[in-house]
Amino acid sequence: MSPDYFKPPALATHFNGEHFVGSLTCKECHADIYETHLETAHFNTSALASADNIIGSFENGASILSLDELEVKMIEEGDAYYQQVVDKKNNQTLPAQKIGVVIGSGVKGQSYLTWEDERLFQLQASYYPPTDSWINSPGYPNQFIKRPVRDGCLKCHVTFATNRDFSGQGNQYDSAKMVYGVDCEKCHRPAGKHVVFHRENPDVETARFMLQLDTLSRQLRLDACAQCHSGPRDRILQGNSFSYLSGEPLDAYSRNFHKGLSNQELDVHGNQYGLLTGSKCFIQSTEMDCGTCHDPHKNQRNDIQYFNQKCMSCHQANTAICTEDESVLHANGSNCISCHMPTIPSKIMSLQLTEDRAETAVYVRTHLIGIYEAEDKTIIETIDSSAVREIKEFIGK
Image (cartoon, rainbow, N blue to C red; front, side, top):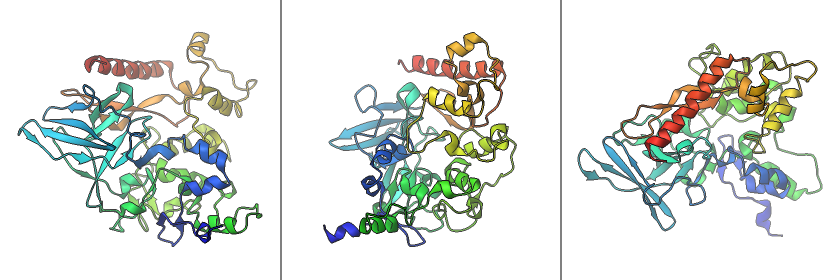
C-alpha cells in the first residue's frame, strides 16, 4: 500500500491545527451514510459551478433576466458559465462574469458567486424554483452592484474557508482551501487524525479522534445545528465565524445582537433553533433536539409518513386526538406538520421576481410547533399558492 495512503492531503487546516480531509475519506468505513448524505440539501448547499449543479436554464428564451434598468444574460461557453449585465440606462454592456461557485441546493433557490483575484462577489441573478426562472438576487436593487461575500454569509454554506482577513470582514479567500458543502467535518470536526489512525489501525472498531454527537449534552448537540440555524450570530466574541467547532459552547464564540426576542419576533428564515426551543414540545421534553426529528445523513424532505411517525412517537394515538375536520385531514394526507408547523412568510427575506413587480416574500416552514388557527393557515396557504400562480402567469409560464 502506498505510504501516501497514511497521509491524506489536507483540504484545509483549522485555526487549531487540525486538518480537514473531506468526506470522501469517510466513505471507506461509512459508505452507506456517505451515499445518502450526498442527496441532502446540506451537502449540496455549495459547490464549484458545473453543468451538474447549475439549475437555471441557459437556453434561448429562458436565459435572460430583465429588470427596470438592466438586463442579465446567462451565457454558456463549453463547460464554463457566465452572467453578463447590460446597463439599459447607459446602453452599456459590462464584462461577462464567470460563475465560480453555486450557493444553495436548489430546493429554495440558488445564488452564484464569482471570483475576482481571489475575492468573492455575489452575482446579480439568482434562480427561483417555484417559478422556474431567473430573478434579481435577494436584496439587490435594479442597478448593477458588486456585493462582496464575507464569512458571515459563507459560514453556513461551506464547511470551512480561509479568509485572508482573519476577522472575516474581507472577501479575499484562499480558493484552493475551501471545503464546499455542509460536510461530515462541519458537525464531526476535522477528521485528519481520525482517518490516519484508523487507516493505520483497521482492526480498532471504537472511533478515535472523532466527535460523536450522541455523547454530548443536549445543549451542545443543539449548538452544532445552531451555528447555522439560530440567526446571523454576527456578534463575534472570539476568533471568527469559522473558529467554532461542534462540541464547544456556541455562545462562547458568537451571539445575535438582538438576543431575547419573543417567539413572535423571531424570523422563520434562519432561526429554527430559537423557534424550536420556544415550543412546548421542546420545553416539556428533557431530550428533544434537532436530531429527534431530523437525520442529517438523509434527505427526508416531504417524507410525510416519516415526520408523522416522529410526532406520534410522543403523541400516541390514544392520548393525542386530532380535532381537525375529516375533510381537511383527507386533503392534507393527515400531515401533522402542515397544521402544526405551517409555512410562514419571512420578514427579512423577499424577492423581486420580474420587471416592475413588487417584492414577494419567501415562505419558510416555522419550527415554532404549536396550534395555529384554521383561518391563519388558510390565509397563509392561499397567499402562497396564489402568489406563485400569478407570478407564473405574469412571466408566461
